[in-house]
Length: 123
Ligand code: SF4
Image 1 (spheres, rainbow, N blue to C red):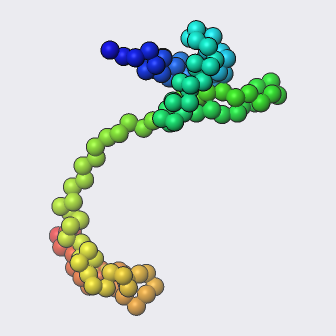
Image 2: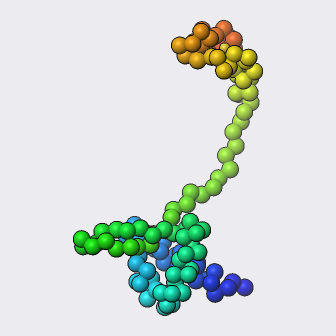
Image 3: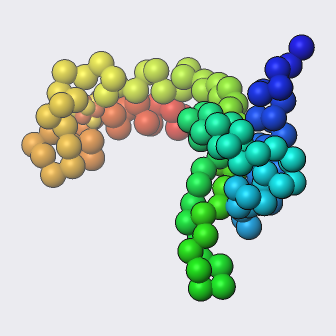
């Protein structure tokens, strides 16, 4: 069973997210949820620490106002990269890798090993 605190955390998070780019003041939020500003402050502190919401100072009608905003999270996704095609790049096993650079004595543009590998791929 969910505790009151985590239930309020979820509700507050949703209410802040609903306000989107306009944000919401702490007083307005306390009123809409029906809890004291003191209780709200404690929960907001937790949510800020969890980095799911943030406080920002914004200008409204020429006045500076502190508002709460949801922090947008990027969905985590598993990305699979097929290394088959790059594992044979000659640079990975080259003793000259740390000396090789454009404009240096050893350079990719004049490397026969690299050129051969590219031509092999293209064939
Ligand atoms: S380009 Fe040639 S010399 Fe440079 S690191 Fe790759 S294989 Fe080595």
